[in-house]
Length: 343
Image (cartoon, rainbow, N blue to C red):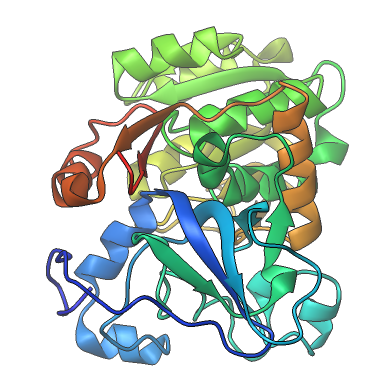
């Protein structure tokens, strides 16, 4: 990104040189995320308020091969395939000490690659510390790249709701695209809940069923009633994961959740949920999680390694990313668009 509230530009920059403790990654792939679109839309004051300063390279979902290491680096070797843990914290606060760098008390989850620092939409990515690399082993880096956010973020959200998702429970995924198509698979892999997918696009609902959703409901005014009809006694879902976060999807979530349930708003579409007597059932929790921990990324990659989850990726070359972002904005992506420099 070179200008505020503008589309990204493809520019030539020098290859980064790793300093002490740093690692240079030859990028295999970087995923395109709706968060990138929000960054393009933010005015200058909002960017500065979040500690983000232009220019920087987009791409916070990255994987590749170690290409060069700085002095003192011994934990990885040239040629190692690694995924990049995206939220880079200070490394010293209480949140960072437990691997939850997305909640760092200093950086507040901003400043990593593609979020103020140069990201993976390039041929090379400079990683600040080896702790932000997770070994891939025999996993394909192209398929693994989107798991660092589109897989990790719903996994973190679902893991928080696990006590509610036992036998006889219902989990709802609103938005079956980039995050949602992985959320459906994660729910099927680690819970016994009945999974209901909701989306405006008929094609995404078809894909949701193919990925393991038990039911698919078109978004709209009748969605909440259709969701409740899928729950035990029509009493509502135990957990609703809103992967969109608009006013309309939050309203659906509030109308579909049951008493003592949980609404988790993952998407960043800017909606708001009235939270007062009469707007949600009794004893409902509303959660606004962000990304996930480094330890959880290991678990997500283990699920992929076991064949239990798989990101549906469409690869495009670096030069094709401006058009790819236009498609993402138009909702014309069923899984994850992944930039592959060598494509």
